Every structure is written in C-alpha cells, then in structure tokens.
Image 1 (cartoon, one colour):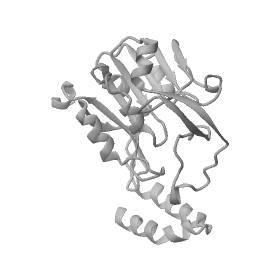
Image 2: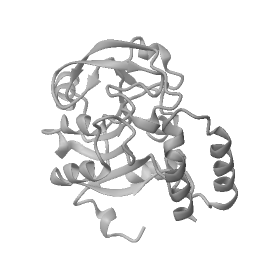
Image 3: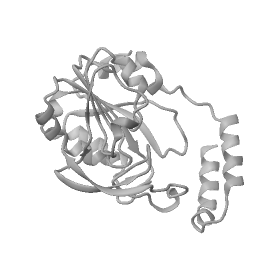
Amino acid sequence: MADEFDALETAIAPLRASGLDVSLFDSAVNDIKTRYIKKLPEYFQRIGYLRYLATDPKTIIDIGVSTGTPKLYEAFNHLPFLLVDPQRNSEQKLKYKPAKYTFVEKGLGAERGTLTLNESASQSSFIERDGVFVGDYKVESQYEVDVITFKDMIDSYKPEPPYGVKIDTEGFELEVVKGMVGAFDDIDFLICETSIRRVYRDSYQFSELVAFLANHGLLFYNILNDVSPWPRYYDTVFLRKDNPKFTSVT
C-alpha cells in the first residue's frame, strides 16, 4: 500500500505546489492511513523505555525545549537538567519543567556567532521551510540570537558528565551535533529529531547525520515514534558504539 500512496502523493505534488486547495485529497488519504495502516507505539512517550536507553547519565540536556518535554523530565526527574532554547523569553513559555534545571537562552550550532531565528512557536528554526513543505507554516517574527557550540556551553556551565541529550531544532540538528566535537566522549545517549524529507532549505539528509555521528563514536540504535511509509522526520536514538545494548537481545 505504501507504493500506492507514494504514487498518489507524486501525482498531487504539482497541484499542491501551485497553491490549489487539495485539502479533500489530504483528508481522504489520512482517513485511509488511519483505518488500514497499523502503527507502532510511540516509545518517546514511554518513561520505562527512555530510562532503558540510559547507562549512567549525571545530567540531561534538552536542546530545543519549546514548552517542555514532559516524559523526558519524568523519566529522569532525579537528575539536573540543562534546558536550551533561543526564543525570546523562552523560559517563561515552559508548560513543563524538570524539578532541577538551568535555562540557557541561546542557540546552539557548529560555531559561535549570531543567526536569524524564524520564530514560530514549537516550529521555530534558523532555516526556512522549502517547497511543498511550506504549507500553513507562518513565521511570527524574526530576530538575531547568539549562537554558541555545545562544547562552549559545557565549558561555561560545567554540568556533570556523562550527558543524556535530546535535540529538536527543526532541521538544524546536524549543525548542533557538529558543535559537540570535543564532548562526544561524555555522551551517554542522544535522542535526536532527524529530518527524512528535505523539509528545510539547505538542510541535511538523515544519512549525513548518521555518518557524522558514527565518525565520532555514536551509532544509530532505534527510532522512538510511529513508523510511516511517508516519513518527514523520526525521533532517533544514538548510543556509544561500545554500548552493550548492541550485542544484547533485549
């Protein structure tokens, strides 16, 4: 059935790109998907599985917080957190908070500097959406923000290693990961939202992220959310290459 849906989406793409209303088509396809495609459970919402991924982290770092990541906070509520988000007054926008945290209102990237943030609530990004994926995406405001590297942040705030890290930066994940050079030995686990389709202009491909992390000792382990025949992104897990989970049946 996946092939049939791909063919339908390919056929409708020119109409979608032209601005024609294809909402009835989308509604019909989504209804068929809901009825006939069996979904796997969302493991990102399972506290026990999040804990299983960890070996012995001492600090959890949540990059791209938006309103918060409640299951992550609940899974590791005994640990201190670093919460990182560049949106103005982002700490005040939190709906969910861990018991103990430090907030860093900066962007993370491959190098220090400033970048323009396209603010759009939980979909805020340093890069713009592209092509058919623009859709109803609305930029509420644009402004310059300070950007540092992950290693800069670690050196400045000095959280206790090892670190459990979650990254969700709307197409900018590879740039954040590049800024982790010099800190990879202190990563316990990495949960990263990864783009599969080219949703963002000049963004990375999933294979590029996997290759970069593999070159620095972190290997792809699993995906945490529903499997889709038409994925735009997956929440993915990377573990150290010597992690015993790679040689265990459970």
